Length: 487
Image 1 (cartoon, rainbow, N blue to C red):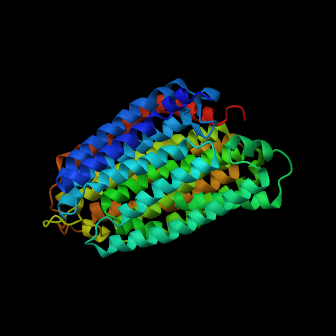
Image 2: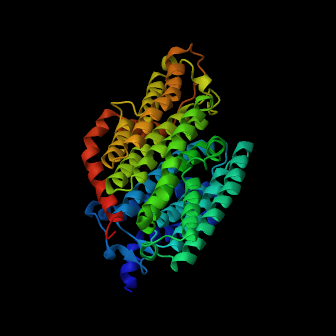
Image 3: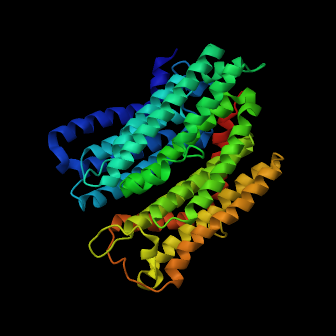
């Protein structure tokens, strides 16, 4: 084994680990007064990591040359695509967090460190080539996330969100670990390649249960129905920058891990898990759409929107083709941009005292009092609904196209019909802002960093983004091809 090459392949994780430990010492010595400096340094480290992984994506890296430590870790194009989205979500969180927590005098030096170590775990998740790497990365991310959810100690909702996330997350991890033990027992190995070969013939009942348990544990992490129950409460209770993080980076990591496990490790037994994914996809679409209709809290609405969009993304996995995997990645990249735009708008919704305005009814007449803010939120809602010409339409289009090409016409038709139901609650927010009588509740001023992020995110969801569809599609194709290499 070439350890020098393996160490080079894991350079992003090494950089995150070393930088995290150094900044941890800085936080211990300098205290919370160094929190902003540590946040800036963390963003710089994440940016450096992005530059380290970008060449692999651009070159379409795949095959044995991308494997480290005997195949336990893979630095291929698929991992690079996921890591770029993870680092982007983590970076946005670190940019918006200081201004938010400073209003509560609750900004602590530990927050950027938690984001960095969570990013380290998520990087291991999308690069996993072994069940042990999978679990270590998953738990490293989860342990950081539990603390982040309850980070605002002066808010009872934050403490409740952290507790619920911890209890249900621990249950999901137990289910996943039980599935891993069954897979190991019936295949005799933990590497994805070994499991793939061992499942080439008739599948034992115990192995089938292992597959289902693993998928169930990962379904919790992506908040897919029927394992979605934690999402609305955690999204509402967690501090808004942390909710922004949960809606972006961990979602990418968990979906990337689900794709690796399903298409690589369980690729020989597609029919065994395909029905489970189709069921979870359709149930997520329906529950996400119907559950959001009665919501008055904008963060809870975004939580149900997340469940709904995960359902659409899973359609790409259900078809189990390279085109479906590429469509998933395109949708995932667009979804990250939509989520960033949505939550940055929410951060800018403040009353005259600087407190968050989260009730949708309090946005009445926002188009008359804050027209640019209302326009930004309306564009996010239309994009999430998949209404052309906004870029959110393209994500749904490529997923449905992949389903039709794979002869999953009924699945595509049901998804299209269900997307019409989902459009109702998005349009409800637009109706409140543009047609209800103004109450002028949103009066607070936003930070320059938030405004700049919002402009960039809104442009990424605008019709101008279609100019980048060819490039995005090519990068997604490179990443998807790495998943299907030699299988």
